[in-house]
Every structure is written in C-alpha cells, then in structure tokens.
Image (cartoon, rainbow, N blue to C red; front, side, top):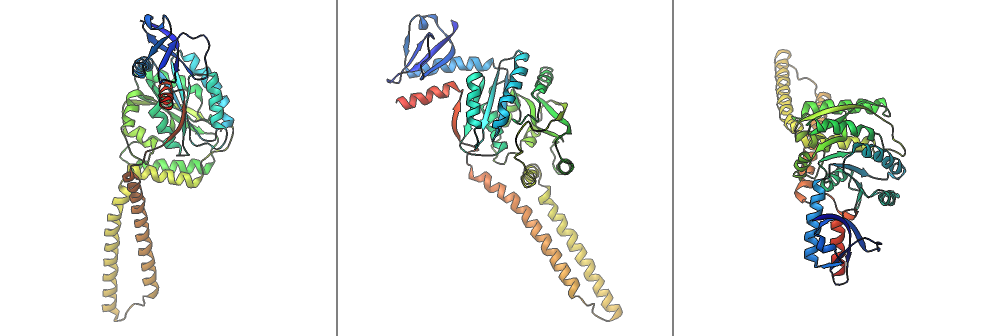
Length: 385
C-alpha cells in the first residue's frame, strides 16, 4: 500500500475513474488516497460502491490525523476576512500541526461567501459551509462544531477582536492535558462603560441564579478537546446558549488571559435589544429560579395582605371609623396587577422556549458547502444518476 495523489472523475455511467494527476478538468476531484499500487498502474474503473468505500476509508484515515480545527462563524464579514486568514495562516503554519479552517457563512448579504471561496482557492485547508439563511451566531457556531474533525477545535470570531496569535497559548495548555482552555478577557478595549456595566450585571445575575458555573468575561473564543465537542453534539436543544453549554459539560479546564481588541473593520451586529434577549436565553436555559421565585412572592404578598387586613380591623375597633380606602385600594390593585403580569411574562418566556423545543425543527439548513470532498462526490453521483 502507498499514499499517492490521484484524480477522481465521475463518468456519465455513474462510475468513478481514478488516475494519476496530469492536468485537472473542471469536474475532477483532486485527492490524497492510500491505495494499492495495482490500482494506479493504469487508469482504473471502480464502481460507485467500491469508490465510496475507498474514499471513506482513506478520508477516515486522514481525519484521524487532523489535529486542529478553527471554526469561524461569518455574517457580513467581507472587510475582515483577507486580514483574518493572513494572520491565521501565519500562526497556524508556525504550530507545525495539521489543521482545517471551517467557515460558516450565516446567510450573509454582502460578498462574504465569494471572499471565502476566493481564499479557499489560495488555501485548500479552508472549508466552507453556507447556511440557507441567517440562523444566528449560536446556531452557526453549532454548525461549525458539527463539521469540524480535528482533535482540538477553536471557535474564533471573524472580526479579529479575538487575536489569532493567542491560539499558540491555547494549544500549549491543551497539550498539558486540559480539555477546555478558555480565553478570558482582562479588558474590553472597545466597549463603552454601559456595555461593561451591563455585562458585569449579567454575569453576576446568572452566577446567582444558575447551578452551572459560567465563567465571567469568557466568550466563544476557546479551545475544546474532541471529546468535549462530541459531548456538545449530543445536546439537541434549539435554544443554544453556547457559553452555558461549554460550562455545563464540565471536563478539565483552565484560562488564558488577554485584552480584547476593537473590531478590525465593520460594525458590530449586536445592539442592546439583542443582548437583552441573549441574556434571557442564558438565564432561562440554565436556571428555573425565575419560575420558583413566584411561589415565594405569592406567600409574601399573602402574608402582607393578612397583616394589613388585621391592622384595618384593629383600627376600626379602636377608633370606630372606617379608614378611607380608595387611593390605597387603587395602589394595591395596580401593584398586584403588575406583579401578576410580570409573573405571567416570565412563565411565557419559559413556555415559548418549550414551544420551540417540541417543534423539533432542524437547527439549520445547509445551502452549499466547499471542501468536504466526499460529500461533493456524492452530490456528483446523484446528478449523474
């Protein structure tokens, strides 16, 4: 057995021809396969079934050797991509590791997909998954983790606020035996005082409400061992609060500190309304205390109402007059009405998420992909048949 680069061509008869590479036609697929010398002594015709077995075996062997996957969710990030890949390539080439770069185009409306394809033509390690619409960053990140095949996986944003140069430290900690290596922000250089304050308030709140220890000031930028990703892939929930899921799985973890930089170019996709909904997703996904607390509020209000009723009875018996109560009555009614509506709103938040779960829709739909060779050949097979 030898390892050699061959050309796989799908014929009109739905067969695949393997031959030595001389020149590549548009319909050919260039691959590195482990094959018997007899198969390449001359162009060899294999049946579709034989070819699929050969490709599957060879690709599984290659994937077993893949050490690092970089996962990049992209939504309208065209201005940042060329510089991102330039810095990534510089870092990854110094690591002396086999790697792939999984880019998820999350329904971009600019030329993000075209830019990704152009960069892939210069670097075959780049693989692209184009989703059918914008599903949101958490879902795009999930899609990237499901497509990644490396022994270690690092999600990173495309806006370069998370420095690719930190990857070397993450990998170093992973080699020491850690399953999760968090990149923890020491300082948010580009964030306003209000955003820093609200972020601090969110992390404090979720720390008080959730039994899961979700680390503060840690985003999606981190290293995940393969067994961590396999554990995450077993979680089918539709409301994806990835920071919480990363913490929930446990495993041995540590942190690497860094200062978060401003965006390289472009505008942030987040606003305070989106951040509010994101915070609600986090709290409702990892705590039921907002539901439980209404039991205690009910008991407290009932006790206060009992004391107030006793006070009015005693006052009437002593003074022999009825306390004028229109204003106090209106205040109490409005107060209790507000409390009840607030409780119904919280119940509605949980009920809405239950509704999303029971529909069992797929998390995302793939419109197109580039670089996943076996899938490409299967598509060609179906077209030929």
